[in-house]
Length: 550
Image (tube, rainbow, N blue to C red; front, side, top):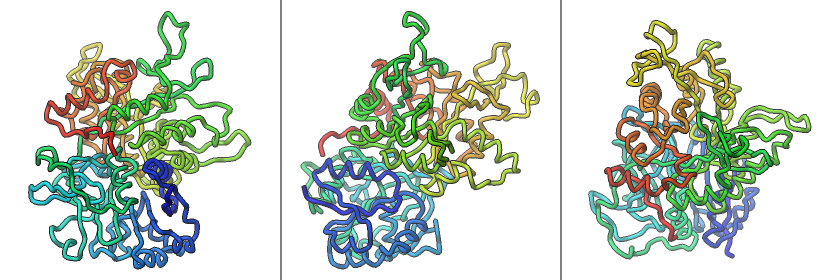
C-alpha cells in the first residue's frame, strides 16, 4: 500500500487517524525527527489542544522549517484541527505564538453569549455561498454531509478575503458565527474538523486528499434544504462496562446504579453484550459518539494491561466517531508499586483510541478542595493537568447527583430549585446532592458548586446523570438540565432516564442541552439510535444522517 507520513507531537488520539488512513488503503510512516520530513511525499499534521503549545513543540523540535520546505516543494500537505490553525498568522489563544503565516488572518475564541464553548459536535464544511448549493466536491466534501468539530477557537469567515489569496474555503456556522471549516490551495489542504472522527464522510475526505483528487463533480446537485447549516442534535450511546462474576468483560445497565438482576438469575451482573461488538452496532445505527464507562475498577491488573485499553484499540478500528472513556482516571499506584499520574493514564487511553476522558468521583473531591482554597486553582488536579496537555475539550466530568427535597430554600445552604415533582411529604423544593463511589456516598456538596468549579479548573463538557432517573425509562430530568445549563458555558450532555425516542425530542425542545445520551433502551433492543434520530428529524431537529459509502 502507498504511504503517508504522520507527525505526532503528543497530539491526542492519533491511533484513530492511523486506523482511518489504513481503512482508505494507505500505510503510515511516523515522522520521528526533522530529517524525516524531507523524505515524506505526503505529510499530515494532526492535533488537539493549545495553539501556542503546538507551535512551541514544533519549534523546539526543529520541525517548523522542514514543514515550510515540504510545502514550498509542492508536496501534498494536510493539517487537521490545530494542524489547520498553524497555517494562520496567530490566535487569541496565545497572542505571543506565531503561526506559519500562510493564511493572513487570526483565530478568535467563539462568543459564548448565545451558545456553549467549546464547539463540540457535527457541523457542515460547505463550499457553497449565498444560498447556492455547489455541484463540485472539494477533496470529497459534500454540502449535505456533517463533520465532527471540537474546538474553542476558529478563523472567522469574511467572504472573498481568503479567496483573493487563492484559497478555496469551506465554512460552517455555529450560532451567529460563520467560520472556516476547511481550506485548500495548491498542494495544501487543511480541516478544522476531524475527518478520522467523521464517519464515512470523513474517510471520504481523507481518501480524496491521499489520492490527490482535489475536485470532483457530485453525482447530483443536492437541494438547499438538505444542506442545512449549523450544529446537529448529538445522540450518544453509552456502554457501562464491568467484569461479571465469571471474569468476562460485559456491557451492563443499572436501575438507580444497581446492575445486578433482581430475581431469577442468582443476583448476577446483568449481561447485555460484548463492548466492542455493541459499539460497532451503535456506530452503524448512526450514533454520533460512543461512551464507555468502566463502572468497576479492574483490580490487581497492571495499568498498561487494563482491559479498557484493548477495548479502545479494537473499537477504534471500526468505529469512526468520537470515543469517550470513563473510570479510573486518577493518580494511582501500579501493581509493581510505581506511581502513575492521572495524566499518564489519560495519555494511555488517548493513544489507544479515546478522544475524551471522563472523570467522576475525583472531580467532586477536586471541587471540594477548590472551594476550601477560596475558589483558587491548585494546578495539580487531574482536570487541570489533562486539559493543559490536551485541551479542555478532552476532559468530561461525569456528575452523579440525586434529589434532596426540602420544605423551602431557607432549609438548606445549598442551591435549590422549585420543582414540578413534589417530594414524599409534598415538598416543593429540592437541591441536587453530588455523590461519589458510583452513587453510594452522598456529599455535602451540590451540583451547581461542582459544575462551576470544574469549569473553572478546565473541564470542557459535563456528562449530567441523575440517580433518581437512572433506569426509569421515564425521560430526562429536565429541571436538573436547565439548572446546570444556566450555571455554566461549557456543553452539557443529558443522561439518565431515556426510554423512548420522544424523550430525546423533549430534552432538545425543552432544555438547551448540547447532546443527549441513551443506554438501556438501545441495549435491550427496544429502539435503535436510527429510530431516535428519525424521530428528531420528523420533529424538525437537525441531525446527522449515517453514511456508509466512502
